[in-house]
Every structure is written in structure tokens, then in C-alpha cells.
Length: 358
Ligand code: UDP
Image 1: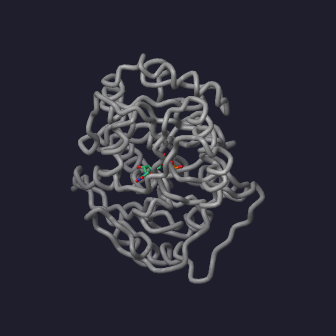
Image 2 (image 1 turned 90 degrees about the horizontal axis):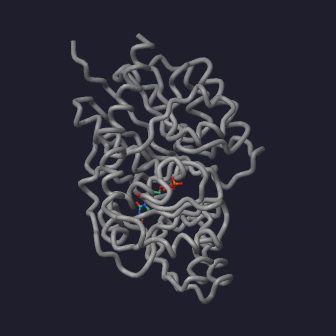
């Protein structure tokens, strides 16, 4: 009997894979897929039409994307547009489910959780954000109770935003370290990497730049243009530039030159893939002591953890960046955040769900 699993990954329905709209879960899906293929499992990715799948087996599905939930109110209702890509994803899953041992859902959306009991194939849900709306909390909790062990999260801090934290399985994250080059001699500027959207708190990093005079290169998907223009108006003298959205290869070429990465999330960041991408390049990370980054960064060793929402704290930490040994950052990424380390946890999770089902 073969030990390999046949896995169907269903991508985020908010946009094309590789576009950045989906945030860190795009990279997580890619890294898990690559690692599972390396381990001899069969993987197919169902993603929105026009997706980049980095040469991985892809089936493109047409339809209208879902709205991201990050900036919604707690009482936001579930909406599904006409010709929904999310609905089409799960129609496809239903049709092909007998070809697979396990379906892996990467969508932070209501429908896949609701449909779980209607499918014969077991579903593993990779939940990529903390609690955002009451409707999502309710449906994820129902699945957590009815299908024990099928809810995977990045971190404990993320799990704790849910009432059912004890029913979540922490999987962490990991990256292909060979794609990130270590840089020992940084340039005199900082980096800020992420979606430009209010929950990411970019304005605090820009305020710190204005106060210290230290330039910041901003990289990431421009999700909310009016938010960015407002920041430029509020801090006209800050030496910051928006560089664009880059592929992983181009991103690390720029990221590795930075003296430090500023992470200023307003929300409970589920993990913050950019933290480990920075560490892999030898770049120390300054972040608020909240959410995933607080579980990853070792204060004074691989960066600094600052009182949440304190721009003064950021400024002070920027002044201490020279105290961090950049090689220690790279070592931390190698020791704990490789795709192999994550792959071990995720593979065991898949096997446990599959075993429970058979
Ligand atoms: N990213 C990218 N190109 C860029 C900037 C960012 O591909 O120019 C990716 C980055 O690799 C990371 C993601 O965007 O995987 C941001 O994810 P993170 O977990 O930090 O935050 P999220 O967007 O999920 O809240």
C-alpha cells in the first residue's frame, strides 16, 4: 500500500494566485504544495483563472472573486456574488472528490466550512486569519466541533482570537530558504513589506520614518490606494517610497538590503510570513508585541518587540538595530522556519485527518 496522499488544494477566492491579493496565504499554499510534492504526494491546485502556480499542477476556475474580509465589521453578513468563483471551486471539488484522499481549503470564507458535511472526501481547513466576523467564527466553530482536528492555524496568538482556540492545530509557517540570500552589509534604509491596507498600520512606520529621518522602502500589493494617498498627505516629509509588488525572487533581492524590517499591524497578525522572509535574509524585524510576530521574533536577538501602536517604541528600536547580529536572524529562520519543518507538521496533520476518516 502506498503512503502517498492525493491532495486537492483549493486556493483563496479573493483573487488570482500570485497577484498578492490573497496575502501571505498565497506563499503558504505554494510552499506546502512544493513540499508535499517533494514527499511523493500528488497535489492539484484549484485557483482563480489567470493564476500563477509557479509550475505546480493547476486547474484554473473562472468566476467573480469574493471580497476580502480583513476590513469588514464583525456583523458583516456572508455575501456570494453572481457567478462566484468560490461557488465554482466547490462545485469542482464535489465533482472530482472521489479522485482525492483529502481536500485542503485555503479560503477564509463561509461556504467551504458550510459545505464540509456535504462532501464524502474529508476537508482540512487552513485558516489564515484570526477572528474577523461573527458569521465566520460560528461556522468555523461548528466544523471544529463536528470534524475534530480539521482546523489548522498558523499560531497560538491567532487561535486565541477564537472561542475554540483549543480545537485548533498550530502549524506555523515555513519558507524555502534557498530562495532567500543572506546579506551581511545592509544599506541605510528600512523595509516595510505587506499589503497596503489599514489593518497593516503602515502609517506608524511612516511616522517613525519621519521622526528618525531613516528612509523606508515599501513593498507589497497596493490593496487600498486611498489609504496610501492619505498617509502621504499626513506625513509629507517622511523619506518613504512605494517600490511596488514583487515576485519572491525580486522581493528578497530588495528586502535583504534593508537594515531592518518594520512590522506595524493594527490587527492580530495571524503569522506574518514577511517576518521569516526578512529573517532568512538576515534582516532583523521590529514589530508590535502582538499576534504572530510576537511568537516569532526574539526580543533583542532577532529584532525588537515594541509596545503595540507605539511609534515612540518603533523609533527607539530603530536606534538599537546595530545590536542585532544579522547572522543570528538567518540561523533562526533555518532552525525553525524551513519548508521541511513546516512540511513535517502539515503532513502529519493531513495524515491524521485522513486516518480519522478511513
Ligand atoms: N509579498 C510579495 N511581494 C511583495 C510584497 C509581499 O510576494 O512585493 C508577499 C510576501 O511574500 C508574503 C505576503 O506578501 O507572503 C504578505 O503576507 P503576510 O503573511 O506578511 O501578511 P498578510 O497579507 O497575509 O496579512
